[in-house]
Image 1: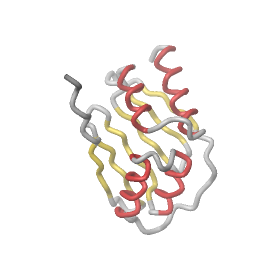
Image 2: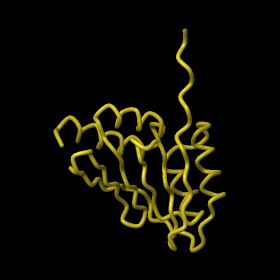
Image 3: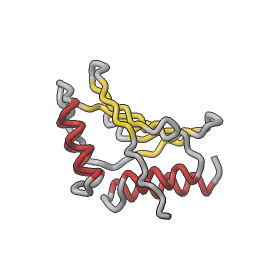
Length: 137
């Protein structure tokens, strides 16, 4: 991974933790550097970013320790996703809501255009990326 790619990843993580950027903006920037996917691990407080060639970067996240609910609620995760999509919440609040819904982490599959959220017992909830609006003519 080159310095520019590393800088973009670190800046995206930092801005997310500060609640100063949206998921869509982060994904656009990561697509721009050729990132394939990333894994957010709530238990370890870190994200691991993966390039198509297998190169990876781990970035520690300084979010408050949260108790992850024992039971997974796909509806709770979906509600948090919808709030984020509407711009009602940013990442710090998203983490609180999804951990309260029993989410231990998720994979953002950029090339697959989906996010897979999972719980303690392997439960999953999959969110497809919203379709891009049609280009103006």
